[in-house]
Amino acid sequence: MDLRLEEFELPEMKEDEILASVVSDSLCMSSYKAAKQGAAHKRVPEDVAERPTIVGHEFCGRILDVGSRWAGRFRAGERFVLQPSHGCRGSLASPGYSYPYAGGDATYILIPPEIMEMNCLIPYRGDAFYTGSLAEPYSCVIGTMHAMYHTAYGSYVHSMGIREGGRMVLLAGNGPMGQAAADYLIHCDRRPSLLVVTSRRQERLDRLAELLSPEEAAGQGVELRYFNTAACGDPYTGLMQLSGGAGYDDVIVFAHAAELVELGDALLCDDGCLNFFAGPDDRRFSANFNFYNAHYGRTHIVGTSGGNADDMREACAMMEAGRLDPAMLVTYVGGLNAAAEATLHLPELKSGKKLIYTGVDLPLTEIADFERLGEKDPFFAQLHALCAAHKGLWNREAEEYLLREKGG
Image (cartoon, rainbow, N blue to C red; front, side, top):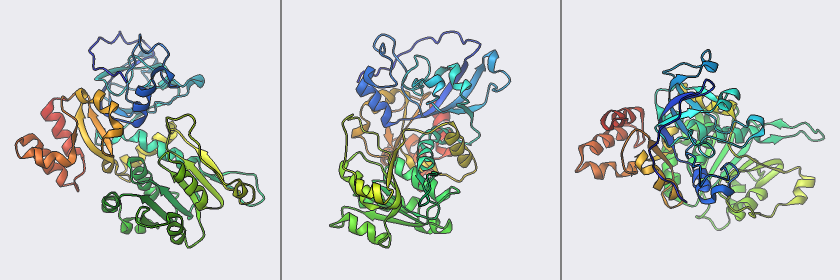
């Protein structure tokens, strides 16, 4: 739990590296877990106390200089995102966890050669940096959908992906990752016919319904239902009724709570697939699973942690085409000066993504507070006006104004 904002000189770029500037980084709970676990984390080096690494792995920026090895593939001035989990030669090393000169919470970085070797440096042609930062979390939910699988009775062949036209429920799906999953499921090419999103907080469901409306989903052939599990005595009965009593082909659990895992298990129909998305920090976390249904009903469970480069390319392509709206995930904006404290206190902050602009000095500020702060500060008054024109969401115009006014 020791993150520090420090200034140092980058070493000279090598022929197999790329020099880049980071413009925006979206903070991830995984960075909090890395800070909490330190060298015990699978991606953090054992000597991190003597050789610090840079945190942040959901970032977007500009390429400044290209080592001679990559001169034919990349060029200075390009916007980029990267898939941090490169897996080069089986390595768990990753920008944001493992490298002293590569991470999202920095102004300038040196991208190591393994990122390019594994085709994990991706040109980004979107019109805003914050959307590029959110391509990584979107790639995680995209990877989740691709990891689900089903089989025909009597067949041992796995048909990868959610059941097209099937019934699907996102348990505790009101957080940023659940929102990203719902956004993707409604607008991708392989959609369920019924999508249920649950939460224990009605105000969160109401806000999500404003941003992802059942009417919009219906236009894509998806029946979208929002369900408050705290407002009924028996969530299982209520959710089964929504499925017409048939259960669900695909269930994703977005919170590491044993009762949610067990509820998801109970909701599965024959050949149903449960994905445990929520990464716990307790290595002993467990829950009961109905093995009678696994044996006779072919129910099964998968787990995913992050996406791959192809998932990230899919996210980028859909964002560049305007098919995804990552702005709904962003609830806070701040400068690099706020990154360390915000990362260390992510569990205590309100839900939503915390967006850091690394070339900016700005306290971490909730978008919902722009109007109040704007009563005394014209800077926040203008940010409020720009967000109010977009349903209270962060947007390209607000980003450009922030970067222009604060020098990022």
